[in-house]
Image (cartoon, rainbow, N blue to C red; front, side):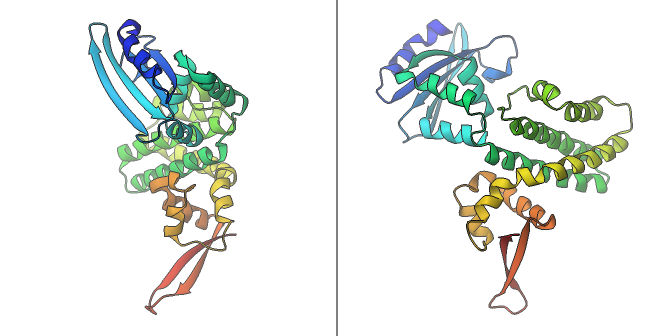
Length: 287
């Protein structure tokens, strides 16, 4: 694929806005790093007009995907950890063009300062974990065990990512290989869920108890980012929280996260009168 894509990356490298060109080739059959393609061509550009531009190619050598990513978009992904494969591409890919050593400097920063965006990443994973746990518990209580199982698997995945981020490490695609070394207790939970001979209902019951313990122990650290943002103002309406630049990354998890933190005593509800005397406005304040 390298020879086939050469003309494409040479053309991109001649563009003054291009900061780096990286080629990631499939290492083995079914390799998840290339998203089922034979090769990924990652182009990093200073041009922010189109944050993400993707094109697919076919040749006798196989299929390839080209992703042109703006520098700003790449930094956002690195900060919040929402596109973990991009970090894998940076480290496992072959650099074909590197303007002023942009890519090499970025890789050094990721290695030397692994806690960049750590609080935000932990907050996002904790909020996802909480939603999956709550929804899974609801399915379990209504005896919808297969749906509950699906949510428990997701919640354990978020818990695993959270444990990895706590150590200042970026979660990889093979997250369970990482967490087996970093936090064997979480790996053991996952292993018991999928391999145990116990009835599904019993497995789920034990997993919900264990998950509650893990969530409790990680709430203070995982909520640090959102609480620090909220401490900058006396009280917040929910819409203000949705519109805050640093909190947008929580997306649909924000309101569940807020209500969970209210329940756990990290956030206080402030009520005020509305035009309708039967209903009150609800604002939020850090305890």
